[in-house]
Image (spheres, rainbow, N blue to C red):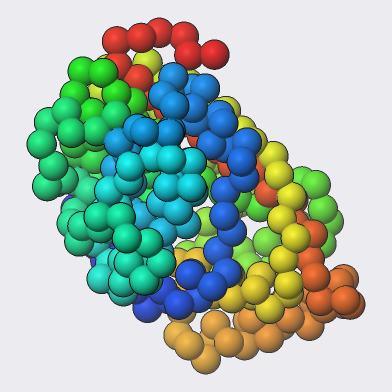
Length: 261
Ligand SMILES: C[S@@+](CC[C@H](N)C(=O)[O-])C[C@H]1O[C@@H](n2cnc3c(N)ncnc32)[C@H](O)[C@@H]1O
């Protein structure tokens, strides 16, 4: 496994507090699309949430009645999850799940699959859902095409952060999970869900600090960059609350069934 993937949980552990405080949730429409594309009702389903982090996706699934087992390699991220939920939470590698074949209806990766080995992770998920379940990954992203201030913010980040990954980069696309699931023999369906996030400026900045491309920078450099963004964004939103156009990309793979939706 390459170094970036092997160390990702350490980067997130460094910013677990910021992640827990300010990362966005996922909209209701995402969970509805998840049910439609997988053909699985979340209420009563057994779901393994891989790369569960501080539990944003885990809580979304629990709130809709799923029986969730959270899995993450980051001790601090998982400690935050455990502080807020009492579902089983395993400190484990998603590429080698400590779960028996057929143990779950659904394996999910919210904002996390790109940190795992692309082929091993999907093979593990397929094993764990047995012959009947589904695998799903989704990613929240800002939608700079809908707001000039957001496009300018993302361009400044791209120029200042060597590790920036995001929608203003030429050729940028969502992680190729659909292709990996198709390679593993699953029937794949994809969709996008648009939504709007209303967020205090300080939370937006804290959210930025929890992104790997800022979390991996030296503290002083990251603080300077965020001070600049505070000034720039404060001019656009003098009342200190941002309205952020967002999108969630969802990819689902199912076994033995074709043409979801
Ligand atoms: C961006 S966070 C996503 C957290 C959460 N699912 C959410 O929706 O906010 C990615 C998580 O993947 C975890 N992770 C990275 N590599 C992993 C692996 N091989 N196995 C399990 N978790 C991993 C990291 O520790 C981190 O908590």
